[in-house]
Image 1: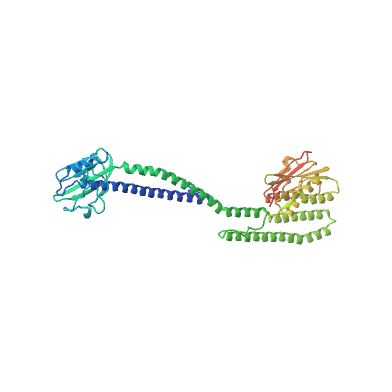
Image 2: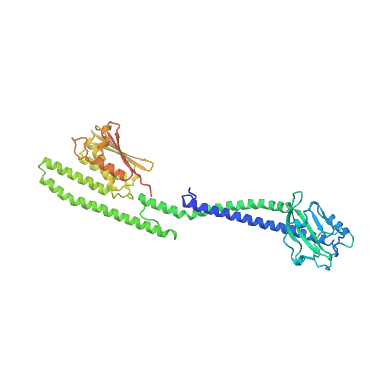
Length: 467
């Protein structure tokens, strides 16, 4: 199973999104922990003050000052339990707090133990009113007892502080607590806007990553478009103003395009040289055996075969980056064919200006010339040439008013060396060359029936896009 998308853009965006989500999740956990510690610290400070106040009700001999304790307890909030354990009694209220000895706690450090003869703070004001639960002089240098989290007998979770006081007789332990909900509720209330803020931040970071990737990968899109333009023949090289990471690739692509152009030129030159080298011997044989009809027929056949295979060799090195203007090319071909047939056939051309094919001019002359000449030789008196476009293709349709070709013979008509009509000149290679050249350019040759009953030959070729 593929975990990452196939596209580079998709992979980079997916990794960026995963990293952003992971960072936001870690940030949420960390911030939530900090919030909980902050709220817990405030609760512990309040419980520490309450612990100090209750400690003031413990006498030096380990007994409790009931009057002072009553005034202090009257000021305690309802629902927040407390507990005092001495050697002789256990007092508590606002809930059944689990005995202190059963509370999970770490051992108290030695400084938290109050010396037996240490002066006890007086938190009672002189006017006799109930003492406040605000800060008082603490006998504990670190500000209070040891935090603990416990559960009451009724199942309520609490958080509190526990401390021990060393008296002259024994040790007195004091515990105060608040419902755990007093910590969890403000934390949850703060986490809701925090989650919304993190979600908005994540959306902003995702949008920024998307924009960054689109801008950052734009040179790759430009490079692809430049390579496509080279393939279509609109340009010969990639632009040099590429980022530093893509500049070596652009340089190599330009070198590859130059090498392909050189190889194409060499192939065309070799085919031309071979044709030139064979032309003279064949012409000499034709002059020498011109009186012998059998020999002349065979020499003509050799000449046609050589032209056919040389055309294939040249077609094997087609230049798909070339562009041919259709209207001027057809005008020249029609003039030449009309001269050959001395006005016997009327040639009508319907080709709008501005249409170009992504075909080498010599190859287009070969394609159109063979089709128009073949139509003129078999036409009764008229040949129609029409040019149109269909999507990214150029359509060249040549129709004559001759006898046409039967459907059963149309496939054989495009085979090399096949002549369906022995009464006319030719060697049967014209339609074969047209079909092979069209297929080399990604097009096709189809044979059908014209409106007048003659042959309709249609060739599709790649349409040149405007630069």
